[in-house]
Length: 343
Image (cartoon, rainbow, N blue to C red):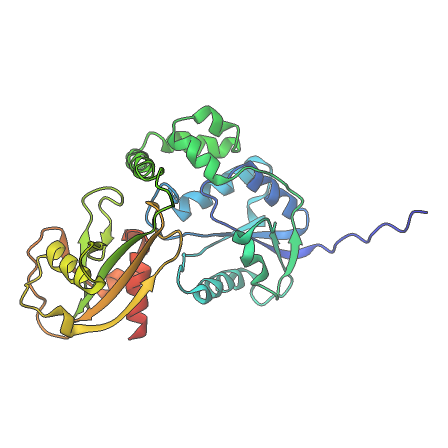
């Protein structure tokens, strides 16, 4: 005997779909279209915003928003039904990430609690779907093995025909145009460099864990930075630092790198200005491979900024540095931010 049919789910006012969309692909579109059948308005939260371009994060949040809007319009979705929120990465402070998502969504919902979270719990990377208990969770029925990693791999290996089979037409149009830009050429060079870098240690008996030391040097409201002149991250701002030598301590490595990369006067006794230190070990912090860094904060107090002997080194006002995470290499902005927030 067949029981009564289940009551249809009530149509929610707002749905929230969180992702990086680097780039958006066909499965993303299918989830969004399914969600729009259950909610009046869909809020697309775009992660990894305001970050430097890398082969893992090749497109700006604005570019991703525009191409998502284009692919939904192409599918017949009226523009007013889709809203957007941009959210930074906070590798070492998940509370800030959760807060930024909540604030962004609330800016659209304006006090409404009729909100649902759209998603699919497939692995540990989906943990965030449990982080918003105030929103009803609506699981998607879209099942796909397609990932943005697959799309990026094909894209940076010039398999554009394969890319065309993985993304909606509007996204393919964008990717084809971006392929001809100087930004793509830079990303492709970095992609090739990183691939060769990983090949160089792929036959090691165990996956290596690299150890580096970095120096966060502050003086009179400024932070000491260096501009990288090689791959990966050419042109990006970074803390002075690097790989730890076989016969040196972490602190000695950090001080050696600060002096060598900035040309800071060796008469300045950095070890007496050490204020704090911390290990930063977010597993995906470096595309080169598993890299753990030990960062040291040296506060040189107030007064004139010391002269720097290297052209690639500069003193940047703290306000400017904190306002522009997109200028920084890897997680260096987050590391500097950590020490500054400690006061």
